[in-house]
Image (cartoon, rainbow, N blue to C red):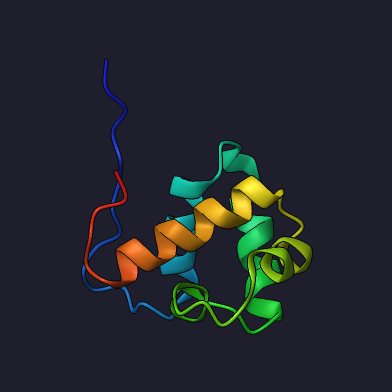
Length: 89
């Protein structure tokens, strides 16, 4: 059975917390952490757009959001894909 990927509605602004949370849900295996990490990102001034533009290194993103290197890399890839109109599949 294939997993269903819920993409955010087109009405959500790319720089919103909700859009970032959508990216996090796709990037992280532990969905319970999405809200806490989204809140940490917003507190640090980060959103899906800033992450997608590569303004931070993977290591910096990892440290600021308390992610593993793999999670930070995946989050960057998902944000980049989604902010450019693609599907993160």
